[in-house]
Image 1 (tube, rainbow, N blue to C red):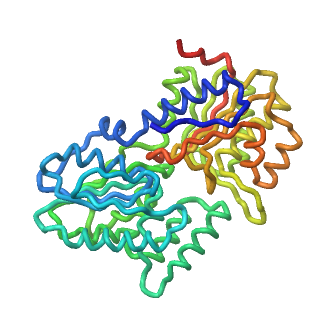
Image 2: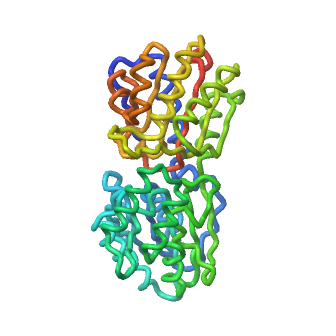
Length: 384
């Protein structure tokens, strides 16, 4: 379990609430917890595992332990900081995110070669999670890795949706858009387990639809998504919590909307989903969770007399291109004019660091989008 780290000076009550909430969400949304609760029919054959994405280690470990003697081997692509030895028959390779690197393509080539060599009378469990599009990178003939990186960076900077980004990736790479499904067509059966980081659980978008192929259709099981994180938060905060899921669009606008709804409400309010930030022309550093949380707090400083707390959390532990996973903010921390400038420049991380609001967990081993919530400090009693 990751430790939750705060900047010095954060109000102890706010720190206690944030720590308990984050730990509850991450425990409830860890791959093992979600897979234990899912209905998963294991293949009856000797079974191989292919896993890629930010939750690949936890998903692969569950499969190895659950398959027992039926586990035949496999390949995992994972964030370097999360890599661990799971089983001697499982090869694990580091892969980078959000931009693919040469070691991503090298690891992908090894995964493809392994998949091609699976015996015809064996099955395969494919474990897919957010970040898989970057991890599993295999350029089409005539396409360079530099072109894929350029496309990824350009679309991310423009605030493009994940649907737009992954549709572009499918045009540039061989294993996306059902390419991996075609490679595995010779096996005795394939089961696909998905930890969704895409609003609406669009299987053609999650990890760019690597196993979505009309000629070779395979069952997909969604083991968790952003609603899983929202439900975990509601259990912790109480049933009176107002939860809005499927939140997308501009992070700053959604943060302001959250504040406006809280002003009119007597209950905690939570937004769950995946917002974006259009950073075109900006030189600052931040991520959508921090942008939304700061926008919410900024709006509340001028509009609400409640003793509020705002918390933003990226469940994968990485908010945008930063080493932070979000922020926790209370009224006394905000200077409205300075906060406004940070929002305008999309430079939220330095400002939130400076006021002691930033949260860091490091990579969490799960990835089911983002949460931003607001409540009064009195609404959650301390744990005895």
